[in-house]
Length: 294
Image (cartoon, rainbow, N blue to C red; front, side, top):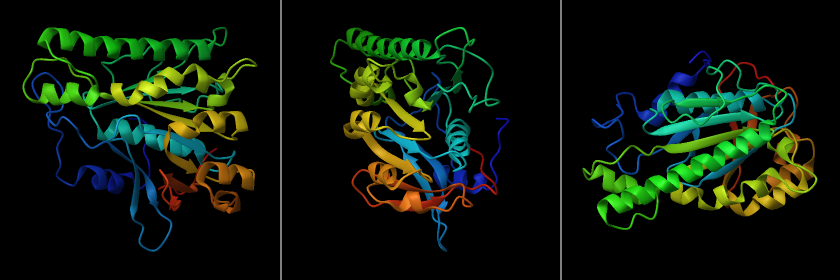
């Protein structure tokens, strides 16, 4: 990857282990039917400097990242994308990234492409300004959902048995059945609210994919500089984890992590934020970089 992160090596070892190797079989997929998928995002902001990661081991663990301009939001997004593709092979995890604001948050991370491409570990969805990026993105997601659903049906027909979900498919494949690899998929959407229209939100358009993500091995991470009430309401029941860097308002911080803490982060501390997993308490962390961008 062309984007390197100061201090990233230690975080990678925390996730993989100093001597851990990815175990891949001859068909190009992981032998472990339920590989741990943990992506490092930083350290606790205290004397212990305990590594912090987001755990995607459980399929359907959708996330939300909110941080105002100058909070380190873009750097953290790039950290997550880079970490995911550096730590895991394309047989374990595929990452798709899109910036609906067209600010090129993911510029330089990969070559230009505009389709979901399972043979690559990372795809950045981009398009000519004359095209509708949101439409392209939604179409790509629907295509991926349909393709994964069909792969499960094909396998069930081939083996004459029920294969209801991603976990079952990979467990059967790990037992020695000759099935094509079906890696987990992380879809990172920067400035997702730019895809909203007067009639609908992008979250509503993605509702089906969000609902069945658990069964297909698909996780979404939605990022934004400011969170509207409409988006928060639509996402609430779908989130497994929430990240708040510095927010614009107390209410915004409370909506994301259930406390005002993120609104109190000084503007001279970019990269500092809070991670809340499920109903647990917010954990203060810092991303491993001497400086942070937007």
